[in-house]
Amino acid sequence: MSTSVENRPAATTLAPRQLYEELRRGVLGQDRALRFVAVAVHKHVLGKVSGNILLIGSSGTGKTTIMNNIQRLYDSLEELKAFRAVTILNANLLVDSERTEFRADRLLAAVEQRARLVVGEHPTHAQLAEAIGRATVCIDEIDKMSTLLGGRPNPIGVVLQQGLLTLMEGETLAFRLRAWKEGVECEEVVPIDTRKMMFICGGAFEGLYDQVYNRVAKSGSGERLKTEAVRTADGSVRLETRFSLADYLKMKDLFDFGMVPQFMARFDKVVVLNDLDTGVLKEILLHSVDSPLARTRRYFEAIGIELDIEDLAAGLIAERAAQENRTGARALRDVFAEVVNPVEFDPAREAGEGESLGDRPIIRIDAARVRRVFK
Ligand SMILES: Nc1ncnc2c1ncn2[C@@H]1O[C@H](COP(=O)(O)OP(=O)(O)O)[C@@H](O)[C@H]1O
Ligand SMILES: [Mg+2]
Image (cartoon, rainbow, N blue to C red; front, side, top):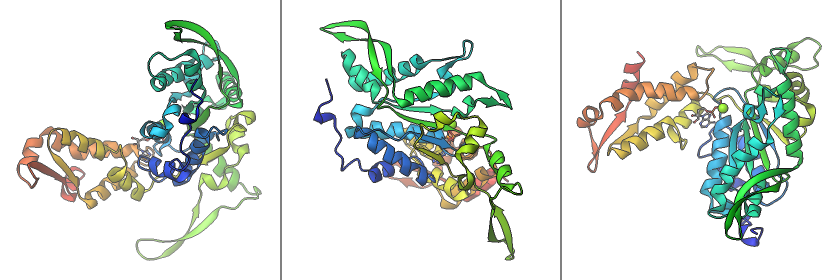
């Protein structure tokens, strides 16, 4: 069995701050959320009962990106090897909508696949069961499993939330596993203990923003909207009402939205993600590990071309993306694709006329190029 000391991570290299810094390479502008995630991961790998987290954020603010980066974190740090069964799945996969039934087996099957990568060849049933039991399970689009949908009861939402809350409380499930026993591979039903799994759920909770705003703005609500003095471009000052969901969200709002109180009680922290402004979008484009720029740069590198971008050009692209305010950072991809397409279409021509770095030609994306595309 592998519960030995060697699997226990070195606490110093895995301090929450270190984990946080690693996560920040791929997730920008969500530092508050990442602090909670870092602490939860830290406790999880020390074998303490970890904090489950619920992420609420508008489309394109980074919910799925945070989950992907948790996976990247575990994959990139050798000390976390034993915990690498990080599984990301969609909430709707966990219910059989025809039979209105919670399908814990589908969750375990997804986790099992990841766990197999951790344990290597010829695992015993116990080794696999242990890796599964230490998994981090990220469940996306959890808001679609509300108990109310368009004002109507949503039975599968009830079933999903109830099923999940039982798992999160800690349950022992009987699960059929194929593994090795005395030199032969065979199937066996083994108990899987979910007590040490960590759960990160995320959703956009569309409609929650308006719902809470209406509650707060209603006269007699006992709450006051904050006002702030803003200086406009022409230099005058005007008072603006600022509403941010994070300032006013109460548990009761989530119950009203259709989340089951006992399910909500299984989360140690509900974090509302920030909306991303132009400044953050620019940072994401320039610096996040998997930004459209980074990907394109890797592509060009592979064909022997250096891709460079002017700071102002990045700012213009971010500004353009910010105008699509319903898709968050997702808009960057589209806007950037528009700008870079001519270069990708005919790189030889674009690279032919400029500077080079050693023998690698440089293609530079400058402000003029961006303006040409969006004139
Ligand atoms: N905070 C962020 N930091 C870095 N990239 C982000 C962030 N938010 C979104 N993105 C980028 O935008 C795209 C959509 O983000 P995603 O996380 O899928 O949004 P959602 O919150 O809707 O799940 C991804 O390609 C991701 O790279
Ligand atoms: Mg998403």
